[in-house]
Image 1 (cartoon, rainbow, N blue to C red):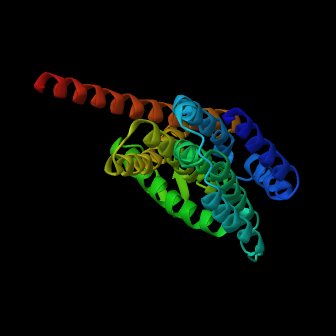
Image 2 (tube, one colour):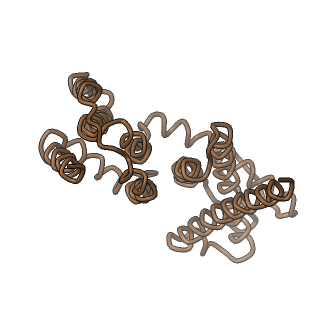
Length: 282
């Protein structure tokens, strides 16, 4: 019975995705693939699938108790979003509508126990949605200001001669401009997405999960400062090769990966140490 209900759930979602919600989902995919600052969205479905897989044993053990009344109410709320004016929001409300309808169908067919286990992986898919252009520009400007200022201060501490005029950086051998793409906002969006998933997976208390998101914000700022610092120092000591596309992208990914791995490593070490101390005291 549970397997049949699960198959019905996926059949309904597939049918809705290919009919009512085809255009919003298609536009979302196009934006993730083509729009600046949205590349982290490519990883979101895989992270969501992994989080759901971690809950698979609990989902299998949960009793399939249909919550028809609650499910219908959530489906109605999701469907109502399709009637809201979408001129200012584009596909955002339809995508949210799709996820709410999916949640309602899940509740109606399999009940609250299954829904509790699957809710976060399901709504984590919202992390795929790119920020609105105006908000993206505002956040990018804040990130660009902090990253540029931090990188300049870092290099000045190493006695590297440079002059800053806004986002124009003058080195003795060249002139560099920090544009929006180098602001660090991509680090911010990616670290926050990974931070949400990490907090759900490894943290239990609300305070610990909030702390993870604060650390993710700090990592994005540190990453932006270090990346620009490497660019400026390499340009000064070696030349403009680092400003070319492939070396620049390699540097960006390297800084992102090293910081993420270091943060996870430190957190797991502290958690292990905390458990050891608790065990010794017990």
